[in-house]
Image (cartoon, rainbow, N blue to C red):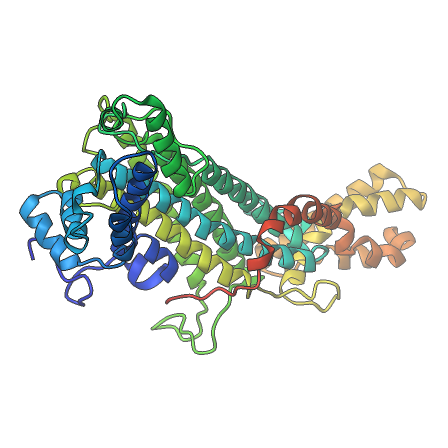
Length: 505
């Protein structure tokens, strides 16, 4: 057990992110098979480029490497690593065992970070490519929700105290706007990723300059060719032994920001669930509480908030790590960072924990939020006077909000503004006393209806109290926001919009 337990066994710890929550495709990107297969692909690309530029590497050696990219003997690699105490060399030997003719040219001129760091950059890029359409789908589902409810009045809250009315759709657009910023930031950080490339032990490319007998142009071409084979448009010109760990800060900062957005959205949903205005999906056989059968806990939103907090904290790891990278490189960045092992047990394991956990967490909260957004339930019936939940809350607060409209109507009917203000002040305090001291409903309108002073406008009260007249330009703002900002941003993702969210557990 000293070397680690059986991670597929119920007797051994397994990260719930992988075993319970994250999608299979995201788990695969951070799997050992994907990582070590990418190492082999990088060795193949290096050999192909070196052959093209004139090094004595045969077509037979290249073909042998191509034929064994997937033929990974993990047991042999583990035994080699135990013997050599070096993860990269363990896999060089394991690859060489199934490629005997190519064994002598595998990893030619390279350092461990050629496979380690370049693989991590490929994984970051591909993981971002998985997150982007998922976030776009969440935005799309919420946009549909907002459009359908663009004019549906609801009570606004500031400081979680009743404020002016807004609409359900307008409130949803507050969520969408934050997620759109996250989508743009994820796309930017993905497009800004650069390949480490072919740089050697301290970034000077000295080993490759020696291989090509001082031919500076061929070394430049080698770097460019491998970068293009890996699907990157640019490589770093300057590196130490590693790519700058500022890259990890950039990536995890964007993911942390996404976590903040999701936490705010799901907190709002949880509060609205308590107010019985909105609910997340609740399955037919779902149990809300083991003790209280009637409960409908917002489990999905709670999960998102919990994992979002975890995601937001992970950015501290790359911040600390980048700050202590001595000179060309030190190894204390690995234990909380990446996806390799062995002699890099300190530095690369950092990335195994931090980077993988960040993406698996982001993947989980986006899958869950999409599921929530596809089944949000609203309890309104706001337009009629015999309405339910949202309407009832509006009716408690709307009379006070309507007092200014009532004063203006009385003035138009020939009344005095000051006299009317005093009348309403007295009636409002009486109504507030009923609400606060007796636990009754707000009866201000009933008091106005029976007061002869207000008889000139009694016939106008229904119109003056129409909730839609208190929501300002909310519905127009929703329409303009969706058309001008949201739909254009989602256009590149149209082909993946129909995919439904599936929760693992």
